[in-house]
Image: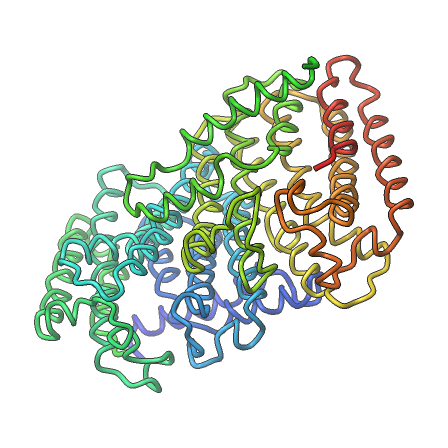
Length: 295
Length: 295
């Protein structure tokens, strides 16, 4: 196992324990809701956002205990968006991470409340734990996550996505959609990790540039994988976007140009880290991982 | 018009302007989502929670500009819960405040995202405006709203409510449900208003007692009104709870005992304010209003 792979595995398994501890226990009232929240968050996903937060936190000299609270808040927002996104009135998907989606395993009303309660819990985590010695800075962290989640962030990106079904989007519009839909939260993960430590504003700006590039690259690669993979490899229903007549980088550019775009963004992401030296190694490796991944 | 009525009208109309300013404009991308958010929040409701926040803020010597940001955050949480609650997978209601519900006027996917984005906006407001000279205290305010909204607050109450359909709840269980479902957010409105100013902990505890009593009284009166009123007076579909075989204070106690319970809670609420003197007048009048209201 490479050094990077062991770093990833160690953090993924550590993070799973963090989530198990931070999520309400399933024997606490209302039990069914809490069980469904745990079902929707635990044992799932590559934890890309938390890994980015860990890496940015390490670069910024933050204590791991603070970084993983911030990472958990971001991951809960991501998890809630998947639960709501899978519901019949949105993408109507029955499979997620190889398991039945929340509304299939439980029911639609529970899935709705799971998403709602996970979002509240994210903001509870960011406000009840000490993540910075400066409370005013921590309030800014709350704001950062709120904006990244809201109508000019992730939820707004979903709305543009919905409106785009059956339409011919131009590249700048598709990009704006993904900057909102996927990019905002990936960027928030990196910045929140970094804010747990100490970096100069110029360094934060470079990290933000890195975050924008990997966020967009993530989506481009997602579109390429969705167009190529089969359902078993992907762990979710494959080819759905094309089936749903949603514009993707692949439908817009073709597979070759989409791959080229991901490679260019990868290069830009690494360039944004140029000023950091060896300490940004994990962020570089994560950029590689995001672009090279096969699932 | 009584002195209290003019106080209420002045704050209601001022608060409407606050909401109009704080909600994203409908010409900002994503326009349809922003229009639906404004549709769901503006021109609606009695604004009971904001009025309680104003009254508690006045008692605590807070500046009105701070109080109304906190009040808006609470009202956005309330508004999002109504939008989600009205969806087909929950109460499946087509009428709210005399207007078509959000998913009827727009569509289900938009209603889902409206609720999600309103919740994010609530936490954005609490973190981006200065509401206290002490940032650490303001972080506690964020936590207070997050807990009141989440699985051990409003969303949890909804989950218990769902699970109770067709069941015979005992009075303590029904009470626990409403403490979560309605009580938590009413209590948060009062405490957040108070936290914008300065009160001693003992005074905050008394306000909290007041909040618990009016929160529960609000729900008992709601059940009584729902069992008696017709749809036109109520501005929402009447008699739904009994139709849906949901336990209410009326189905459990009968109308007379439910009225008696509301009167007792009213008395307890006033008693909790005994230590405050004349300055708690508005909170007393609001307790009267909540118990005596006809709609």
